[in-house]
Length: 236
Ligand code: IPE
Ligand code: IPE
Ligand code: MG
Image (cartoon, rainbow, N blue to C red; front, side, top):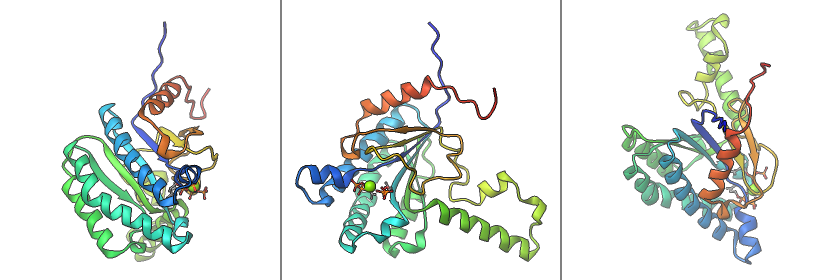
């Protein structure tokens, strides 16, 4: 029996379907977001137990700012709550927290909480839980281009220094390897402005499960399927 196993260091997940989960139960969308946040904790803990080194979760996109104020407020309220209590539980599990996204759009107290959590967990040696909050890949790429333009203009760098490695280092995900596996729940088959640069060679999985119903068992099943795929990177 030959059992092939791909190297799986980094899983990224587009956690979609909270609203539909609630709708199906005649509950407000906020109920779906609450349940979804519980699933985050469970999946993060179990991914860490499975030796995954990086787990990146898409929690709030730059486009999600365009949702009704009431929903944005609910999501930010949940985020506050989780940054304070639940993520400190992950700290006990030796998980390191990182946040990627446009912080200038977030309320100051949330930015401060994020900085504290990143700082408090910086020495943890377990999995890096990377939360994409107010994250949009196009904005990330534009910001990187601006940083490079400014450095070249100042004379600190020349045009010929710009290569793939340098560009990657200008992204929020600096120091984080590209995702090996990118999962989207809820049946939608699109990327919705998530890790456009970083997912160039990620294996994509689209699950019909709504995020609040997503389980560790399904994650294991996807990991098994990932292991049986052949990653060619353009070679023969
Ligand atoms: C994902 O669930 C969570 C966020 C985008 C914040 P949705 O809120 O998009 O749920 P659906 O897609 O409407 O079901
Ligand atoms: C993507 O889901 C963003 C997150 C999961 C945070 P959306 O629900 O916002 O994406 P679209 O609108 O279906 O593309
Ligand atoms: Mg959605």
